[in-house]
Length: 169
Image 1 (cartoon, rainbow, N blue to C red):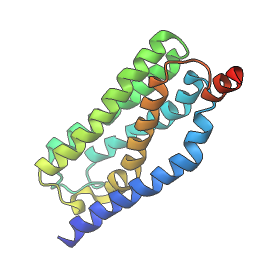
Image 2 (image 1 turned 90 degrees about the horizontal axis):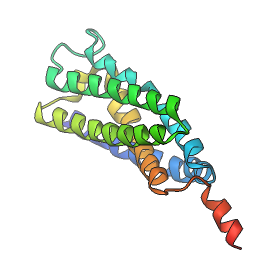
Image 3 (image 1 turned 180 degrees about the vertical axis):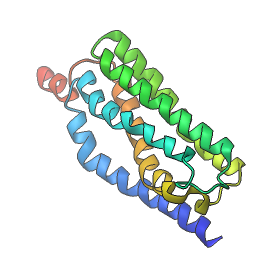
Image 4 (image 1 turned 90 degrees about the vertical axis):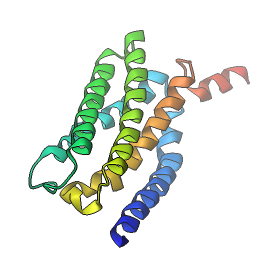
């Protein structure tokens, strides 16, 4: 039971810490960029989601890791990485924005599905082995950057927010 508490506390503190970093450093930089330029660093970051394939590597994870969780998390992340790269290659076109929407919806749903699958399968933190850092360190940042991605996509503009303010003043 103590390992479960440590696991959830790690996720909670990581969400808080990454939230502070995003609010203090990421968002101030992204909000002054045009939409496609603001999306690029987020998409580049998510192109590394192939790391989730580590859930399938024997010896990296426990042999007791529920396969329903491992396969859903690994292949969901791989699809998210492919969508991120497809969007990057297609930007700044309308197709690139559309793929960014698909990526952001898929990627967010994939993360929530992984949490559901882990809970449903009764996953114990020790079964994650060396991949323990993925849900406790990387996933909170992925969730926060998806939030930033939605915010950028919902702005429906191609100019940075601050330029519009300056033009009206």
